[in-house]
Image (cartoon, rainbow, N blue to C red; front, side):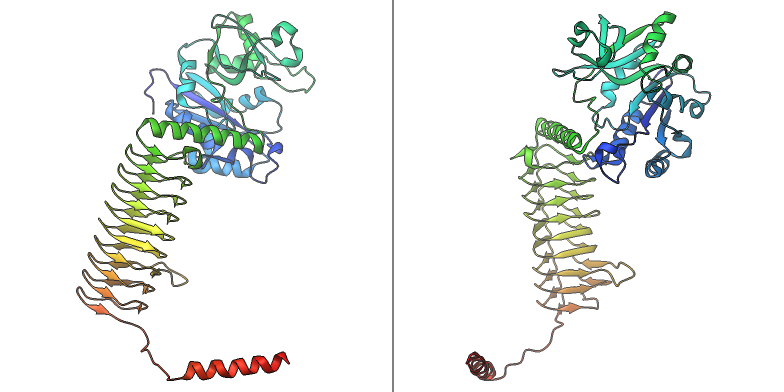
Length: 451
């Protein structure tokens, strides 16, 4: 969080209907980088050092309200009902801010790529109104910014603009900052005498200039202020997020063989010197140390991978998986809430859930930690240097001692002492000639049926 000399607050507008998403999930809760767009906006406000954050929600989206309350509490909620424009939405936050004195920035719950560093320049001036603008090659329906240097003269909507104004490629992002008292004084003067009968936040600029208050513009990148209103735009935002993440990781020394095929989450942590093969998916909470190798088609979420460890191909690490230095999780192995010690291995076709595997232990193909009894989860411990043979089931709670061995195909229901061999399978029997007699009988039966 940024340390600031003057108090800051943020108003995040999240009351839109989001009908163009055509989804039962409210627009601002759709994820980018595995995190709700609204959470990205809240993250930016927190990183700016905002001591008050108010999210304006609509009465039509209880899910959005619940999401905000869970993260920020009830006192972060303002309700816009009915929706009467952006200016009206901001005014809904006035009572919630109470006696706050300082600067307030207005951002949006559907602008997921806007970061604190992009917003910070709006706080350089401590009086007047500051707007974030951007330059685009296709201004289209965006409001144009008429400027003189960094002074904002006017925001002109495209449908009301002259050909000269339409030629301007500096556009309004909608993000605005001002001293809180000035902002709400100006909003009280905004009228709704327009075709939509709405109160527009952009009218604040003209009202500020009439008062002689400074109005200025600071610029941000076009991608940073990109709004998301449809599934197509959501996919574009995700692509930008992923490209930026890949670029940052490679600049930090991470080897990405095919960066466009790797999916990162908002909080993925990969140290320089790690190698990531193609088609890897990182869900939230993944931490990969320098020297680790993540092989193709692996999925890692909520897991930690130490230096020298190797994952995959086709492996899945679920939350709580913690691979020690030099550990190996191979193809079609799933690990959940298990700590694997230094050099421990599970190379093929295993499920390890809720337990611990000691250093240099070897888990054979087809091994299962039977951790769930239908009601509760139980813990499995495999000691240092132990060997679990292929196709074994370890029924938790159970402990395999250090250096112990489990014979292939065993179902282990009791603890195995250190250094012991455990066998738990039926005795093999052979019945001489039975198979030959059976097959001869069945061939004759099939031939008779075919006649």
